[in-house]
Length: 249
Image (cartoon, rainbow, N blue to C red; front, side, top):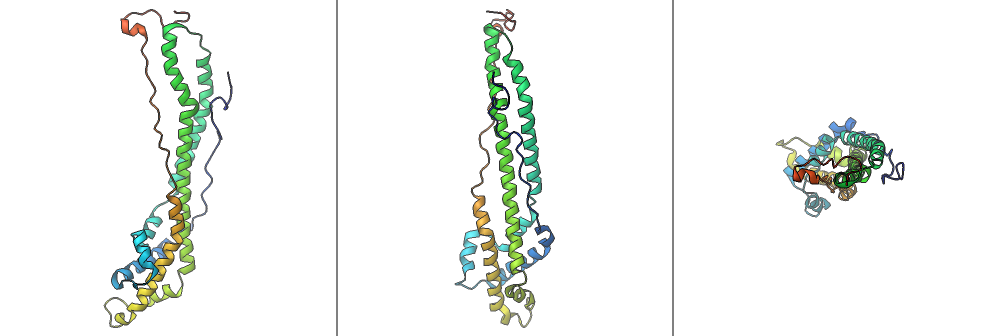
């Protein structure tokens, strides 16, 4: 009998997800969303320059940058990462608990119909405990960690955008413009429309590579196999021949 983790087809029994990087978006959330909400309002009120890159960007993303930024700000990757840690711990528990249970089953000395019926179920249980269940737990934990890491990168990209463009000339132009309905608003429209378009394009450019990488994330799709049930021949005949007694033929 093969002993230890090699028998169970397990790899990296102590695997844990890497810690998430420091998240600075929470500290900047209000100013980031305020700026990009102003971008949304300007695009909706003034439109965009017809030859500007933002026209293609809006068709690609099918969302305004402020709406997109708000959804990123509102999503915290930490709970997903914590669940990945818990799943990894559960997997370690399964791997460690499986060995003595399976060893006991292997050392039984039964024979006959009862042993064969028992072995049908036991083989499926053994396969689940040794390979399938640990693999499913690991796959789900890895996917959760990857998803949390991806969302952390998305939040970092939004933070980087703001640190670079939050006080740019375009941001100043947008913030300093006259209020809606004022006498000077009409004169401000071309500058505000261009500033909003420039900021939207910069935001989309910062998020695009991370969003593209997210399309490669795939969850584990293999369902947990159902364990078969077995009835001994004695159940079919209504007799009790001691099928689960050692030495029965």
